[in-house]
Image 1: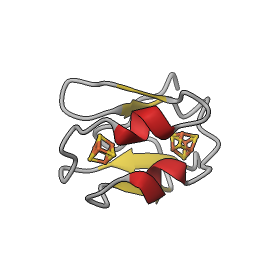
Image 2: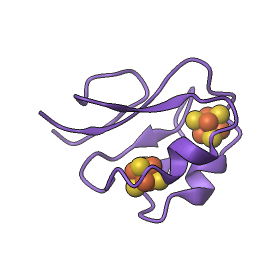
Image 3: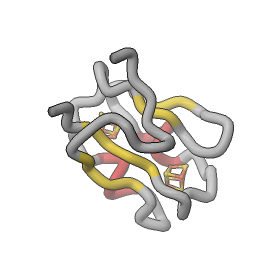
Image 4: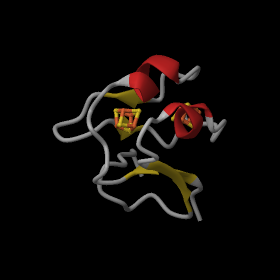
Length: 70
Ligand code: SF4
Ligand code: SF4
């Protein structure tokens, strides 16, 4: 099971998570940021910085708003 972060529909697209990610695992997507699960270390920095609590740690990589190469 891939542990990664997921971004839900509360996202306003403010971009703070993208600017905060130390691994540069996030980038702008069509609706909300996308995360590279191969790069993300689940450091929780984006979870803490999101003003609307749209980011959560997920147990798999299949959620909308979460992109990976696998
Ligand atoms: S910080 Fe939260 S609201 Fe802002 S772009 Fe990231 S997920 Fe969306
Ligand atoms: S948990 Fe950390 S490494 Fe993963 S996307 Fe968020 S800020 Fe980046």
